[in-house]
Image (cartoon, rainbow, N blue to C red; front, side, top):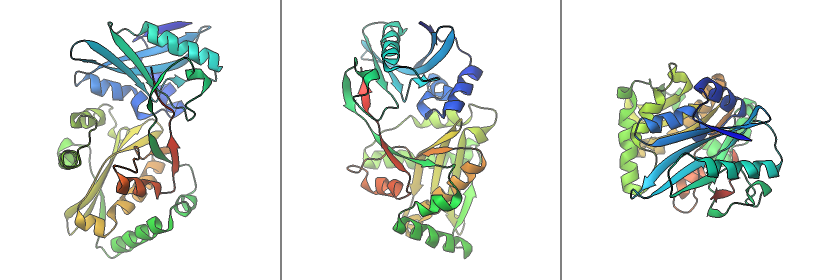
Length: 310
């Protein structure tokens, strides 16, 4: 087994990531966008018998100038089926070879559902897994609507009727920062008022501009009433998948269920772009109950990952 660090090319990485429908956190430009903000990123290529069998992107930070932490979220990406014993050996090799000065810890939050999966049996789970909702966009349009909870679908129909009466308009925003910066400002206000954290807002602009065709990095939709913004949603695109990243609505938007229509229109447009899976970005029924109920109501698959291991 050979672990090669920071040598693979972006086209090679992108090809594998796209085929596997990899998560946002394992997209090359996710790491590159954070690097542009001064956050370290290391990419590993695992070679076994002359073939690349796994890729792993680590986002690295050092706290208090002393201890380094390298987090591989939703990875490694397994390019072919491997026995659990081989995967376990790869985890250990990645930890040993990580090019971050000691003292440091390598943490993995893999795409595993079972926290006792044998491949992580030699690792220690330090955090429980988070949950999210994933929508399969390869389903027929009729099946997508049939999967929705009744109340969620009724709100969508009400919003569609408002749109037909010209009381609600859905607009696709452009990728020029001036066209969506207002939404990031609203997101910052939401974070402050609700005391929650997320990626640096500067990350979004870096990510959107990271590829020549921004249709491959972002979809932004906003809802308007009489030319006044009442709601918006921003989705980050990564290969054949997309992740819901930012959403905002005011009282007027909530009154007409604008988010239901925005999400439905987003599903339709993402399907047209060849996107196969939409990740709604995490749910927490305790601290974010309303948002979580909205996401679950779409009828997507609720997934809870195994956790974070060291």
